[in-house]
Length: 362
Image 1 (cartoon, rainbow, N blue to C red):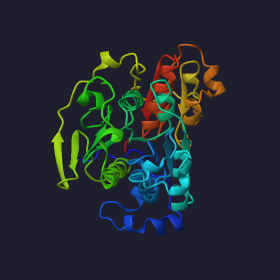
Image 2: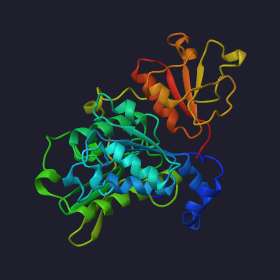
Image 3: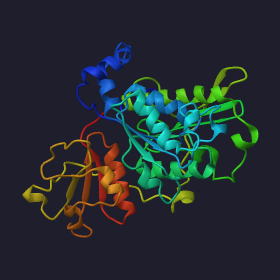
Image 4: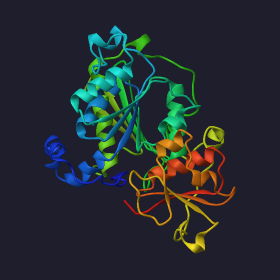
C-alpha cells in the first residue's frame, strides 16, 4: 500500500548542524526539509538492544530521529558480539542500554536517548510505550512480542517488527489503527501466544543477517514517520540469507481477536464529533476538560498542556484531579497519535468519557 501519511508534525526549522548531517536526505526526491523536520520531532522506542537493535538504533540516530528510547534488561555477553555490533569488547558485562546509549551519543551528541533497563511485560507495557510515536520490536521472546502488540493496539501505535533465526529473517509493520490501510496485528497473523520455542541460543543466527533485517526495519520507521515511500503494512517481508532473496507475502485483513485480548487492553477510546467545547468557554464550563498532550501547546483556548510521559508516570494535572467524576475529558494533539495514547492511559486508569482528537489532518 502507499504511505498512510506522516505520523508526526514537523518540529520546526533545522539547525545548521542538522542540515549538514541530513544533507543527503534533503537531496532525496520526495523527501526534503519537511520530512527531516518530522524525524527531528519524533520519538521512537526500540525494544531490544541486541542483534536487530544494533542495526536499527544507529541508523535511526544517524537519520535524525529526535528521541530514541532503548529498552533492554540484559547485559552484554561475549557471545553477543558476533551480531550485536553496537557493543564492543570493553562493554562486556555492562547493561546493554548503557552501552547502546554511549554508542548512539558518540554518533550524534545532540540525540536524546532514554534508557529503559527493565523487562517489558503485560504489566508495564502500556506505561513504557506511552509517549512514543512508533515502537520497534526487536525482541526475541513470544511473551514480549505479545505484550508489545497488545499495548500498541491499545495506544493506537504502529509496530515495526522483525526477527532473525538461523539464516532466515522477517519484517512487518503491524498497526491496529492503520488509516486507510490494513489493520493487522501480530496475533492476527500468528494466533494466540505459543510456548517459547527455538532461539539463537539453540539454533544459531547468521550475524550479518541481523544487519540486513534491522536496516530494513529502520527504513520502515523512517517512512512511517515522514509519510514517504510505500510502507509494509499488510505485508510480511521474508529474507533468506542463503540466497539473499526477499519474498513478500500479502496478508489478508483480519478481524482482531478482541475476545482473546479483552482483558489485556483498555476499552476502545472514543473520538468526539463536531467542534470542541473549550474549557475556557462559558458554554463549556462544567462540561468537558481539554488536555493538550502535544510536544508544544497548540493554543486551544482553555486547554491544559500536559506531557504524555507524565500521564504515563501517573503524574496527573491538578485540573484533571479536580474535574467532576463522569464529566467528559477531551485529549488533543496536532496529529492525534499522542492524544490517542493519552486517552487510552486515562481509560485504563478508570477515567470514563475520555475521547481523543487530532487538531488537524496529516
